[in-house]
Length: 356
Image 1 (spheres, one colour):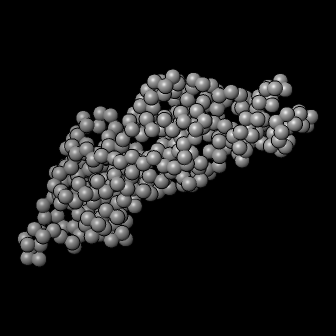
Image 2 (cartoon, helix red, strand yellow):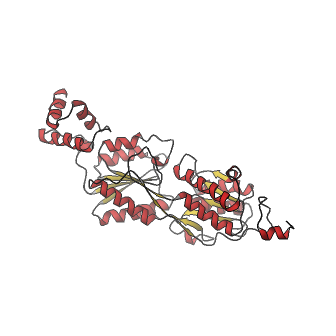
Image 3 (cartoon, rainbow, N blue to C red):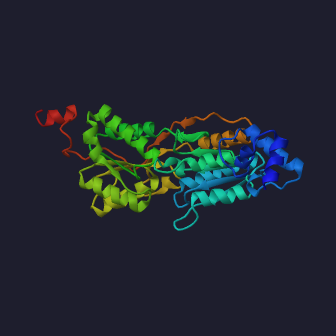
């Protein structure tokens, strides 16, 4: 093996240590240097390690956390269609409880020689996760793009909705309807989109309702991004007197509607609920869900364009492409309950009625 390393290093004009780093897929090697080492392997007649063989020009991996939430199949459809139009074949790899992890799916795709990978709501969005896994992927020469969740530690293009602006739209709508005690139901705090939604919520509650951040924080409830998670979070917010709530996903919003009914409340007569995503078929729920529309089509197209630029040798900048969301008003939001006591800050009309 020592002789082989020496031969390869001599042919490529690099050190044996550099050859070793390339062969083991370690980061910290320039793309041009990596190509020189791979070319030396070919010239000397050595077989490339599986992970370093020529990337398949036809396959692109797409890794999603799960498919139960309709937003992920929606992304997969948009991205798959965009890739197909460009002559690529999408390979969908989905995580599931007790199944393959993101790292295992990534390894599987790399072993099959995909030309690149798109990650949707992956570990890159988890601030507690080790981002070194993405550096290792870069070290193997595999281009990738990440959707939903930004990390300054990862050198790659990111595509995200503006979570802060999204929550501002929702709170503005509910405040205009007369709601003052507005809750926010979302997933674990370690996720970047969750942190951004909280920032948007606290700022909006202060700007629109004059509620200081320390008071508004009591109206933030963490749970899971599932129907059951939304039900649990909404139940807690209802117990705190919330007449309206913004949920971090449409699935959570459906759980919130269930929680309201279990409390003997009607949506939207007693409690208004806003979702997030505008997932397929969500307009046909009972009541039809008011929600924040995540610009799935534009985001998916942007992710594909960025990845194809990476594959083509013109890397996109290490930056975040942020897309503005849209509020879609349907039947799950209405005027706040009359005469409901809320925060001390009252509207002019209510102050007149109470002699304030």
